[in-house]
Length: 405
Image (cartoon, rainbow, N blue to C red; front, side):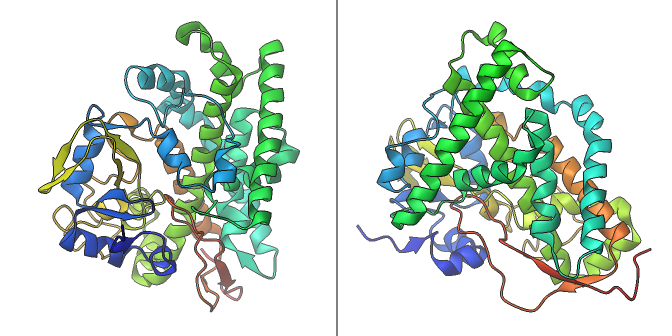
């Protein structure tokens, strides 16, 4: 069967929002490429999907794997069905409880000084360089350093850590060249071997880190296999840096494309938290989620059959004019009501407080320490990711003749 709409064309990867608007207007519930999955694009329907795990299951491991090259399907990174992202109640609640302690407001507040120190360190390095790439110099290393420290990873392995994370989420769907498949498999094997060895070491000698906390959680949850712990570590690794990296990159680009907002933010840094929320709405780092119907379900007059894979497009919901007036306008003073940038319902992102803190501090220090900056000429390069949206690079030109206040 041929589907009219695709979410994977280069044009959609560069700018998905015209396609989302088309879907909301003409086909709010329809089958799309890849794989004939069912896209849900209107705010009301997206929220309905996320609020009803009894109708729309998160147990989508098989469906997620189906988007991969079959050679990658034969050698998954993790062999476990215990996963906070891809589980339903009651398993979801029990697994989520194992990791929530690291992301309480009190726990996040304790990280503020360290996050700021790392941000300042990287921005000082930017000031000493002739050419600056926001992604390479700040957006990537800041969150990956924080989650690496939280997990207890050897600091010398941060570059490997980031590469493993990228390979986990950045591999394009469908058939891939042999060299790409081999690179991904090599990263998976390295990552798996490293973390399984680390898990075994923490079992022998626990420390004050997230992996040890997960192992201590066995008392409440019951016995966890090594792959169960590995699955949660991989999720924390990916979620702990990919979302914030894209938040910083997408947010900086939005400011460069909206100079009035940049001036407003420089004049009133107290608006930064609201600006962060607007970035999450306007250019969501996470574009869509994946669910599977447990029975026939009708949305917007269209019946989705039982067992179908559903894609609630949260980035489309966040641009729905039925919920957000003038949704394509970037407005850092917008009254935020109902953004689903971090999801909704029982699967609301557990790491949202950390991502918000890292984003807030990154922009506070960027605006405080950097001189005025602009984007170097040239086309933007977006990463070809199925469910996330982020830049490969964002070269900046610093006006060194005028220091920021």
